[in-house]
Length: 503
Image 1 (tube, helix red, strand yellow):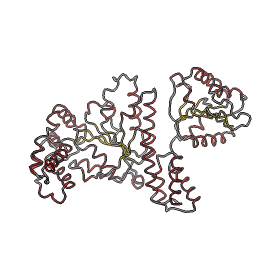
Image 2 (tube, helix red, strand yellow):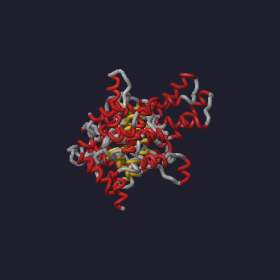
Image 3 (spheres, rainbow, N blue to C red):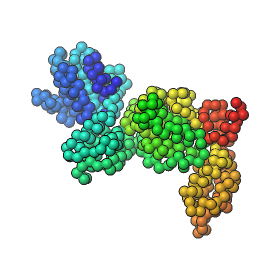
Image 4 (cartoon, rainbow, N blue to C red):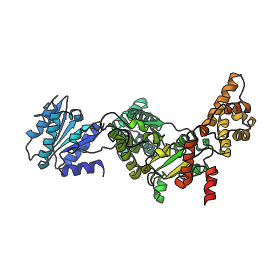
């Protein structure tokens, strides 16, 4: 059910108090007025703290700087007269005992009257004593059709036009922005060169990065890594390549659903985060990184509000990749944090969305300690697949050395004995191999020469890999994966051989 349908139903059902969290006052008020007109031309009254009521000449300024008087105004209206009353920024006054009591009284009174009070706020901030009388309605960011109408209006006003594909690309780039921001950035483009051009997509993307930065929850990541930058992990790479076209209209016509997501479990430094970045680049989709710790705020209801905001922004930007790094740290020890159940509510909202989302948001979650995750997170339906990413085999270490040395010394690659380097660094993860090469470069640079095989081996001898310092943790992870709870990311790992022998 979309916003207009839900709001229409609430008006008809005489829901007295409606709470709409949104930054888009102008757009939501236009939608409310349109629906009020459709409901028998209901008068709409608008109040804010600075100017009081506006619109009707007899009531202009009433309730100025007096939020309680703004509610008392409703009792001045005839009982049988229909009305919709919009109160802007009213969340700031809900903690006042007189305001809360008055709203509860009005909730009972207006059940028998054709009136509705709409509270507009940029965020959800509802005291416990008002949760039963306030009905929250989400107001979504503009959809593609609405954005396209606005872009076409601007094109018409400038007298120029764009081809169908360029117009579609511009509309797609605008998704995830409020209508006010869309108008602002397109006006900037028109002011720059007098018309809209295909390259204005870059301006829109910069505005989008600014919007995402302001949420302080999501980060917009430039994805430059490629699938070929991942050494080894052949099973995982095959799985990803096979789904490369799954977000196209052709896939929908074939009957394929949107891919849901992927859980990558394994030892630190084995390429899980690199894989998330490579997926976005290979599928040509924007990459959003979620720091789950940022979801938790200090104010009551703030964490839940941030979670809903994160979901709303991610869905508005779809199709996209949502990368959640080290999700196990965010939800470890759930229920024992002493936070009045905030973590449990955030977790509940998040996994419900994972299971029920229909938008093309592909979630890539990484975890190092699978035992710390609640079992609900791993239930089928949350993710398309769970992959175990173990330590690289000797062949995979060769591939990792080849990837890094091809990037660092492409002109001198044949001078390195990659077979020997891979053999001499057992139990090294991809991250530890990269650090070994950096240390070898320091050795060579300090002696004013290029680094060689011996420098790499000397650097490797000074590094103690995690596989030797966290033996028990790694063994538990390997036993968990060997029990068949996850697919193996590598085709020729020791675990693969164990599984083949056991079947």
